Length: 248
Image (cartoon, rainbow, N blue to C red; front, side, top):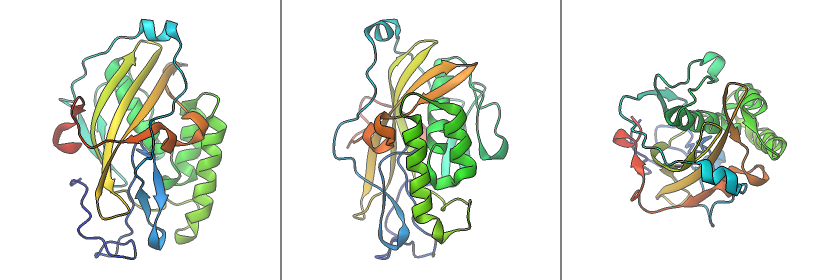
């Protein structure tokens, strides 16, 4: 996927080639901080404040390390316009547009964070977000996240067949930075970029927390059930590990 570029946008929120402009920030759908713009386009919304997440207990934080994870050797594959990383650490199962099976390693946790957060989003339709949230998301705000995805999909599904994806995404995964990792819990910040609502490229960082449950990584639902609350705007990738070529 090419880097996020808004030069081909028109005022009605569509590209000059006729495709609807769809952009997400991950964590994602990847996928945080989305807004509906003109013409029904889903736009990347510049978050207004700092990330909100569930608090991490002192015992958990003390058991964390900050791993060194290299993106070298990852294979990037297209998912509705988003290039997602794959490696020997996962995902090992990718049936029916879903992804599961991740190694109990830092790289496995990073891959789980990206794949699950992207799919836990209304953009891809209930055949994707329902089982993803139902089986791969945990925490007290899981029901709120599911309700939010259902509401957003119902609001905008008139422009597509019932149950189908709302469209492709135009977003690039740019980098990541660890908050901490243990074999039981992890927290990682993921940076994505895409066209915003003012003909500018928006960069946002989304904090994704994970827990190891029943033999696989689960993403902790963001506080309040909103990915937007887990995201914050950034201007630079200084201090982050960059994905090669901006994700692929």
